[in-house]
Length: 115
Length: 118
Image (cartoon, rainbow over all chains, first blue to last red; front, side):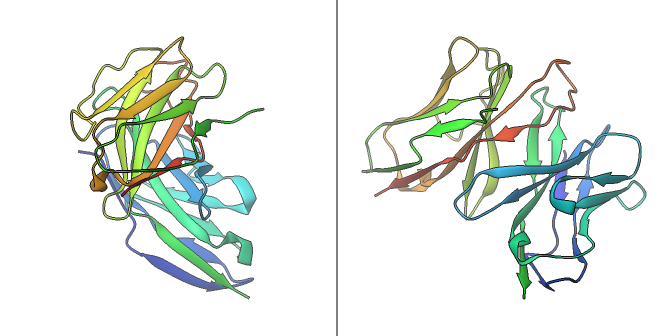
């Protein structure tokens, strides 16, 4: 069965410092991986996805993610954090095993960026 | 362009009442998904529509839950005889899905409906 793990419930970063939010996955077949962000009382906002090709994927708001097949990881990164990046971040994998293509989400990581 | 919209944004109901949640997907998106977000369960998948058809309803948590989609567009999720454990945020997402199975298309989410069952 497909699964996604986000090992950190919370990540604290000082503004201007680089940030990393970790994600590991377990899939059979091709890993279609996604990152979403959720601000308070809002829906999920798409950040970026990895399908194939270059292992470094660039997305919205200066975020990027690195796909590592040998470590089955897809960590989200940003070179310089902003206070406005504080939110809940979800890693997800697309599950086509049941022919429905739904997303399977990690439990989420709360990112807190302090001035 | 317009994103996915959901209504109502908030719904407070009494235990035992029926509720209906609405999702309006992005125009032209053939696939529609319902998810539920709760503190204890995180984000869980409920049901998927391709066009008006839902091939597998096994993700629905109980037979009190049902969903339909008409005209390949608007979808409604109905919860009958609501229970307190139904309290959650119900999220709808849509995607283009031009390539059918094994599609890599992105799912775009609506703002959600926060359901509170008293």
